[in-house]
Length: 318
Image (tube, rainbow, N blue to C red; front, side, top):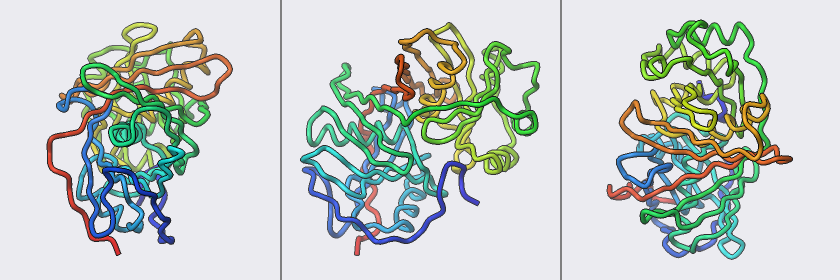
């Protein structure tokens, strides 16, 4: 079974990829490793980045993502450096995913290091994602992605009950001011707000049961949050459908969550919200969420840095 928000692997013809300084092409595939939503290599969410995947078919991309073992690896399958436009695909260790925020930030920073900061456009399975890269301080570049239009709906009782049972949570432990919703910002996420920080910190869920619920309802992650202040939240994101217990930073969920906050009138526009994630698993991350009047999209900003581990050399292109 494939992850929610993902597509089964299908074979198709390979598209050509333009030359970008620093890309590897031809006989091998270099997988770069970046951590996104942190300027500290010990924090953030690691992602694999392949800057030239023009010679790879879908099974090879999936195999590389499984070898890397991160929640997602991003693949640039087509590149137009002159126009700063790139086609991007994402794979978890189990399947292709329509959109991944932290891998988008990681790829944008990797490209900015090679062709210079500025505006980029990524064509993804979820739609067009503009990204602005710039110096972010502390020696790290930052990237601001703009999501596809967001939307949100109340969670149905049956799907909520199934998710809570798999998590081991009770309805009485939820914050009534932040009602359960299914939010979309490129992929779907169930949003559940804990009434207490301790509830969020104590995460020991049934991996297979939650994965089954998520597959049935088409959710990519479950976005668990606790509100510290009107503009500051803490989050955790189980990702069993991708073969990963938990994401340390989830840009796609942050985008969906920004849309959720706007739709429910929980923030005054223009709004800037800080989401802290990864703290309970030892990889602290910070995501800055921007919501502007009259724009159904959401902006998510974060830093990214290269990891010191050597690149993985994948299967030879043919």
